[in-house]
Image (tube, rainbow, N blue to C red; front, side):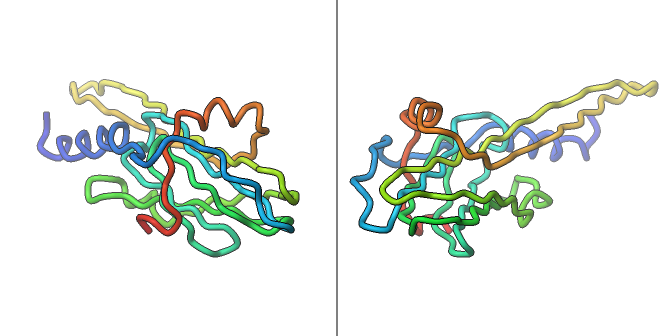
Length: 168
């Protein structure tokens, strides 16, 4: 293996395995105050991008960084909100992913919980050049998507809570 490939392989493997959230298990928040709703942003366990923390903002305010298999419960006023996610990584992870926000819009209703799932995927292709070198190419993708309670509750039940304001 060529010398330049070892750091690339290490960085790639770090992005596929790693950190998981360690807070308390999921527990639904108590009823929201008048005029408010609870917005849950969660990240089911996956290997893709698991070494990175997902920084979550709502309406431009940074709330938390959630690890793989983590969630955060954010009290919001009822209405439409912009949910933004960026990556926060370590020295071994791909800095090209950091600082590239994705945004989704969600409308919440008073007293009703809403759920946004952060999904991440990885697909890799390998080919061997005529010279015998092995090339590995990884395609990483992620998105924020609103999901209904029937879908979210079984998934979020295995997630761990991130503290508001933690790991920012």
